[in-house]
Length: 135
Image (tube, rainbow, N blue to C red; front, side):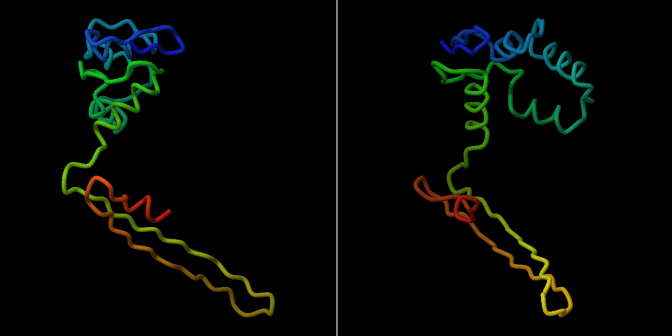
């Protein structure tokens, strides 16, 4: 069972969309009705990025959650972990660019200096992502 601060519980037989509907205070007969209610409440178009991302995340589905105790945040984190985990052989890549404006006290003209860091992550179970290495 997963309890949130509002007292709603999630068990293996409860559809994920139903958990989100109860926890967020929506009355919905199914995942499609929940989606319509969320879009209407927040003034989102069905084609908006936000609507697409909520669909992609899977909150309107019956996806099984392996959270036994926690909150709505824990359930959402579990969904994100499932959706954002790299597949075998996948890795990330990031570019970090810093620009610094330099003002000299001796009257020389101002300069803009920059540095770019290009980091490719490594694949494998014990490897680090590029963003983890870059920061």
